[in-house]
Image (cartoon, rainbow, N blue to C red; front, top):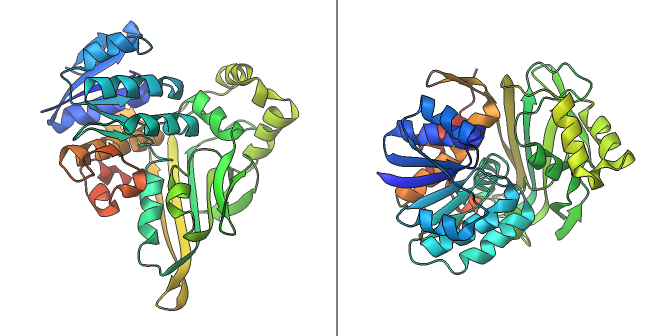
Amino acid sequence: MHSVTILGAGKIGATIAKLLHYSGDYSVCVGDTNAEALDRLAATLPIKTVLLDVSDEAMLVKYLQGQQSVVSACPYWVNPGIARAALQAGISYFDVTEDLATTSAVRAIAQNATAKQVFVPQCGLAPGFISILAYHLCHGFEKLEEVKMRVGALPLYPSNMLMYNLTWSTEGLINQYCNPCDAIRNGRRVEVMPLEEIEYFSLDGVEYEAFNTSGGLGTLADTLEGKVRNLGYKTIRHKGHRYLMSFLIQELGLGDRREILKDILEQAIPTTQQDVVLIGATVSGWKNGQYVQVSDARKIYHGEFYGEHWGSIQITTAASLCAVLDLHVRGDLPEKGIIKQEQIPFEAFINNRFGQYFYSTR
């Protein structure tokens, strides 16, 4: 039994806990400052729960000693402190953050890792699985021309002008829409603006749009710099969403008043678990002297699991982290320091018991 502490008892943390517990191979403890959230989880799952304040690093180090891994399902800004606590406790660290500055901080902490201690940030959907998939498609090319990554977590039945429902962290969503985006253009590493470079497409009779957002590229810009002419990540939304978000963030200036924007969105836009995740990656370049393109597209729907209804963003984010942790426990990943998502073998991931949630449904 691999002992793992999951910090954060929200939807993602609770789903990670359930997937790991039901696998039968993990001793799971969940920590949070919210006693009610812990009680709700303990009522449905026979695992240990503990009241923990992750901002108290000394207390966190003391608790984590004797564990083997820690998973952060907390807001991105507390992750560097959790990573420092993991380093001092001598255990491995995993998170699902999309925040670039947080990942940079974790990478710096990982430089002091001890033997068999790994730090694996960005283990969610985007960044996370999309990075593993896109890098996998790059294999076999003699020369890369373009790598396109597209992901969207969308309501199946949008009924408001934004054509959107909240399906994950509001802070993370605002981060993606407001922060600069990494990209490679004409062979040069650049920053591009969020909400820009909009494109339109239709899939199964539904019209969508995609535009630049921050964080989804993960570390691929580092890995592919000097090897590809164009590289970019865009978020998929129902058509018309980007225009109204641009009005709120740019025209009304709420990108500089993020707490107000968060409050507006959470008061006006309902959550939903009736969602679908769209995942697409396309790579073009030269193979055997020919200019060719390879693509992979997936649709993951919400569904019933272990007697509960889980949203598709909930499933994909939690399953991605669980697959990466499972591969680490099985000895299929590098054994020390920082691990980038693109270092994770796609075939090992998709054939993992948790990775199999990424097969298209319906």
